[in-house]
Image 1 (tube, each protein chain N blue to C red):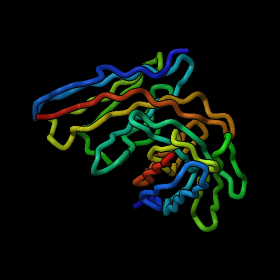
Image 2 (image 1 turned 90 degrees about the vertical axis):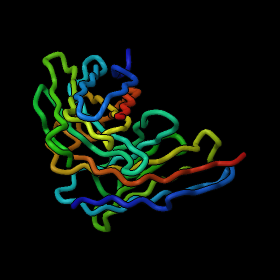
Image 3 (image 1 turned 90 degrees about the horizontal axis):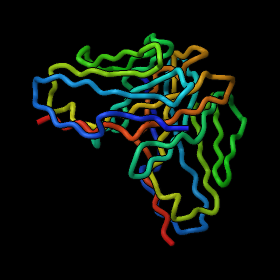
Image 4 (image 1 turned 135 degrees about the horizontal axis):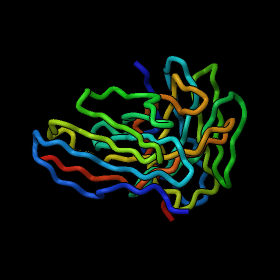
Length: 115
Length: 115
């Protein structure tokens, strides 16, 4: 059975801190790993990673995938209160070129950023 | 450009009934995926459709079904509702995948309550 585990489950930091969120997976026929941010509404897509060692960046957020060790990290630098959310990791498997594949989600990391 | 729309936004049904939820993707997007989100199980993948064909299916019983129409709009149906089907049902659409750039956009969800 495909499995995605995120750590830590929750994290409390102060504005300006840097945080690292972890996602490890055991998936047959891995295709892609996705990160989402969820506030009190539907998830927002952050990144899709398919290749090891290539960092994806968007502003203060960055992510990298290690397909040998089967994990990914999401870094957020200079955190702000607006970064407070649940961060979800999902892994896609058995995908064709037009598909993410069957997605398995982790349980999420609850990030709280205090002023 | 209009976002993903889902109807209805809220729904209350009785055990044993059936329900149909609708999702209209962003104009030009051909892939639609459905997810169930509950406090206990988190976010779980239901199905993915592309060009009216189901490409992937999650681990849900046959009571959960879906389809996609030629205009990319999608519906999902749950028959013989159970209390445990109470959840937020999210739909997400994606454009045609090109390389590593393959974003996914979520609708606001349909909140289903089964009594």
